[in-house]
Structure formats: structure tokens, C-alpha cells
Image (cartoon, rainbow, N blue to C red; front, side, top):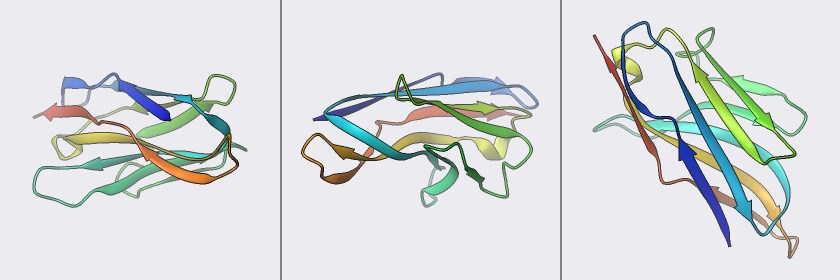
Length: 120
């Protein structure tokens, strides 16, 4: 059993900043990558940013230069620093884990989501 607990969502005015955090716990043997996705109302869920165990990152074009993903391998946490927020960033943000459990089985897991609302 693996749990992902997200925190840090909320309401922010345009141009402001928020920091999302996600902690993974449970029967995790090793983590391959962690990521953040988002889903705006009435739209498909899309990738925001990913980070590998080695620290390699990848960002959606819409957030490059404004968002930064980071992780703490020892704590099994991943953060998303969101700067210069826009109303278009309004969405539910999901933490995603790709890992191997203690039975050496690869799996993926999603958090419950946290709402981010950017006001104009």
C-alpha cells in the first residue's frame, strides 16, 4: 500500500506564488520518477513537470521559467514551486509517483489532488 499526500494548494492573485508538496509513504522499494499533473475544469489532465531520481527535469511549455520541480530522495517528497501564477494555471494539481514496491513490482500512483486557483 502506497500513499501520496499533497499539500500547499490555495487561492492566489495573478503574479503570486504557491508551493505544492507531496510526500510518498508505504511499501516503496525505490522511486523511478515523480511528477505533477493538472486538470482544469472541463479539460483533460496534462503533465506539468517531472523529475527523475537523478534530478533530470522536464516541464510543460506553459510553465517553463515560472515553475520549478524538486525532490528529496531521502524523504520521498516532491515539491512544485509555482511563480508568476496566472488565471490559466487554475486547476487541480496531482502528484504522481512511478516506483517499485517491496515486492519488486513497478507501479504508478496518483495523489488525491489539490486545488490551485489563480485570480486575475
